[in-house]
Picture 1 (tube, rainbow, N blue to C red):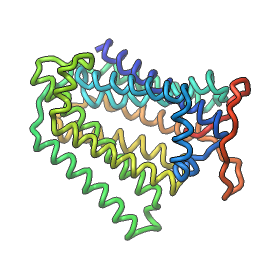
Picture 2 (spheres, rainbow, N blue to C red):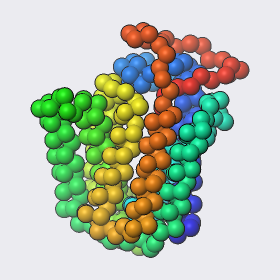
Picture 3 (cartoon, helix red, strand yellow):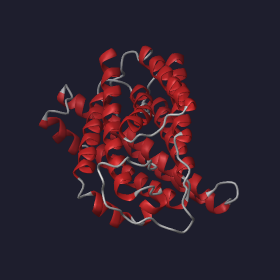
Amino acid sequence: MLEVVALVLGASFIQALGTALQKREVANGFGELETRDFVLGFRRVFASLLRSRYWLLGFVIGSVGAVALVQAFSRADLSVVVPLGATSSMFTVVLGASMLSERIRSSEILAIAVVITGAILVGVDAGSPRHAEYPTSTSLLISALAVGLSGLLILARGLWPQLLPREVALSLAAAVQMGAGNLLIKATVEAVRAGLGAFSVTALATWQGIAARPEFWLCIATQVAGFVLLQTAFARGRVAVIGPLMTAGNTLVSLGGAVAMLGEGVSRGRFVGAVTLLAGTLAIAWLHEPAPERVRGTAPGPRASNPGAPHPTCPS
């Protein structure tokens, strides 16, 4: 299982590298742009970023990391891949320090140490994967439960606005959709693996098999729904709240679904490792969020790129 752990960690690092490149270009072109401003001015900002070679390179690199994670789903349990994939937050902090001149505080170093400890615990107790082809009815049930739970969260926010703030409800609803997407892509991978007898992201037959599976298109639907809910949350709330909630909710939904719906067995060591990883990831997400220093109501405009100038910190 060591090679599987290396594959997931490598994919997480690649995704973090792509994120750092994209973050660098956003910071270079828009200064300390808050996520709220990014969402509300999405068309203007996105059109500018599409003209940036480094931002596009970051997108391509991040996509390669995502494809590598799909390969990992075929070689390890979901309850191994998802927690180890959360190490991307640790790599993002380290790359931010080297590429964006961001300062790593002592508290963040401690959080990174917690993430590393959790990754070791999960990797050591990864065990043999459970390969099983899941019926389409399971995928339909996952999608229906995700829609229902997300709807209940939004409904609860309307009924009890004081107990459940808007940003919390939207973040958790997005996390449910993203977690359901993890379950559906795992079901897709196992179905293709059972049909072909093998699974390789470098083979055309694999992608043809993926495209032919209804689970894959259900996964796409959940990811789009999760993206829309997440962007709505960003427009309504604070990143320092939304980021940790999204990370925790996504991980917990993925792990709970893996046990309850995919029949994966999570040993005590793997569970402790996943919880440790999650705690470290949440600490990084909370500690690394820079405080905005702008006057409320003023939106920054794009400024000319200056490759020779230091790159200011930009929220992810």
